[in-house]
Image (spheres, helix red, strand yellow):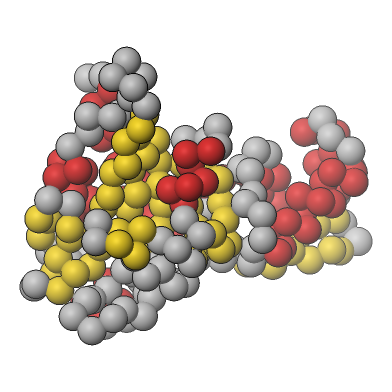
Length: 230
């Protein structure tokens, strides 16, 4: 499946959440054709939104529990399945990418197993970013759920790994580019010796909530590192 761009999805969902709305009204207010509206609705349905077609127009019944870029307000591509979000960010114009599943996710020691239910994203970063600092930011963000210990970008709960961070740097000394990758075990199955938020808490956790907290915390830290905010 191709990755999905975030443009206009948030505006369409905002209208749908106000109640049943016709394709004609969406097209008029967003300056697009009704065919384009239908394509956006079809895309949203394909990733888990339950949208009914009624005599009054489209009606949103249910939203999936996932931190879609258009839901949390970040300039990311969304991929249902990707080889690696790192590769996607390196070759795209977007700030980052998030996937429900990775078939070739990378970790600090090679492959990062990335089945559905976990949080997997990559984001552009300053070349001189300190991975340990990012680890502290994420550990603090996850503190709402469980006490997390950060060891150089490797995240543990009572000695069991719950997540990790990698940094890939490219470019010249004058044009340093970097991509930061993050993987967190949330509701996904994990290998022996690892853990997840669901295992630690004893029940399923909202992936959308975890994703929004972690991603926004990381982005704010990156902005601070770039000097974009005081």
